[in-house]
Length: 76
Image: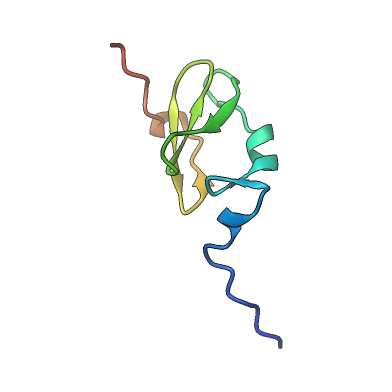
């Protein structure tokens, strides 16, 4: 069996990857609360909804799109 080359950390350099999330995946994701568009957060550890402002965490590059796990926008 052939050994796969180590690709850990290399996906972030790919032009189709945005902050650890594949751009094609990011384009089809929607906020589970309001169905708004999801974009990458300022930090590489979250995604946010353009409509309702909820911020969803990323765990090991996997978006956790669970409403109860989302951080609500601040009201100030």
